[in-house]
Image (cartoon, rainbow over all chains, first blue to last red):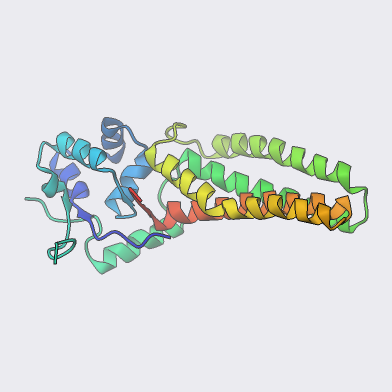
Length: 77
Length: 161
C-alpha cells in the first residue's frame, strides 16, 4: 500500500468561501464522483495534476492556494 | 487566503480515517460492487468446499458454484443498489485506478494457480486436484483483489503511482 500523501489542501474551506458549494457540485464540475471529492478533501487520494488544475479553475485561484506541500519536501539536495 | 482543512491537523486526520473505516461517508457504486463481489466469490468457494468435502461429484459442483457466484454477484448488486442507491453509477478516475491497483497486486494468485496446473499434470496428479488448484487460484485472486480494493477505498490511494 502506498504511503500517505504529504500534500494538504484547502478545498473544504474554498467550497464554503464559494457560496457553500457542495461536494456534489464540485464533483460534477470536475467530472468525478462525490466520494472522490471526499477522498481528496480528507487526503486519502491525490488527484492527477490535470484534476488539480481543474479544481483550481473552479475556485478561480492559483494551484498553490488549493494544494500545499510542506517546505523542504522534494527539493534537490 | 483560506485556512487549510484537508489533511491538516492530527485530530482531523484521525477523525477522517475513522469515518472512512466506519463507513460514515457515502459509499460509491463501484465500492459497493467490490463488496458484493468479495462476498459472492468467497461465499461460492466456501459452498464448493463444503459440498466437495461432503463427497459429492465435484465437476458439476465446481461449475454450479462458479455459475451461481456470477448470478449471485448480479443479484447482490441490484439488491444493494435498491437498498442504498448511489448518486452515480459511473466509474470515475479514482475507481479505475483502484480497480487497476487491485487487479495488478492480486494477479499472482491467478498466475500461481495457472502455473501449478501443467506441473501437476506432468506429475500425473489426478484431474480433481488440478481443477481444484486452478479454482483455488481464481477464488484467491477474486478475494485478495476485492480486499485490496476495499483497503484502497478506505485507507487511500495516492496517484499517479
